[in-house]
Image (cartoon, rainbow, N blue to C red):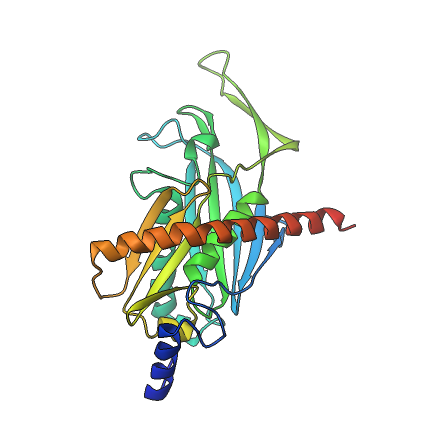
Length: 288
């Protein structure tokens, strides 16, 4: 937690009320976002995202697995977040473990559609190789390097960028000729399929400070929040997930207004993120 004096708290709240935040931004303006892809050569895809002073890395590893009995026509996606103790003193020990679990759960709800899978931004059916027998398991590992607020949005952006950078080997599946033989799975070393990220949403977190809510809150602003709602929105403006944290309750009409604002803000964020990802991929191609 950020320790602020009464004067500092009032100053930040007063600025937000007047639509002028400490760093000069308006309430619904993001900090500059920078993307670098291909930062972990051993992974199938990876990306580093810097959002102000918040710095995160996401990597994607694809491994052959077997579909679950409950979903034999789908692959599986696992998301894990680690909060480095060097990013924030409070990440030492249990504090970091609890936040890691909270962020991992929120990302799964936002990107995978929760337990039901409805509205999933990452389509598990696209990971299937042979129904009931072979699929791809995607392991998405995230690391928080530096923390200055709005970790969830930054992690969501890093996962989207890492998936854009992900190539999955082409696979040929040959059924066993007899019951004595094992099925043959041939994984190509040369042909890779690019992961389709068109349906992967961005996460927009609206943080309520006083009577107003803001996007991309810094650590100082988060220390003053009464509640925060994170809404994942895809390119078509559809809501893929919604999570809330903070003890204060919110009126349903306020949440509906927040969703409307998130849809508007998400368009700018998606366009900015897409252009940053394209620039990062071009820079990778131009490297000798």
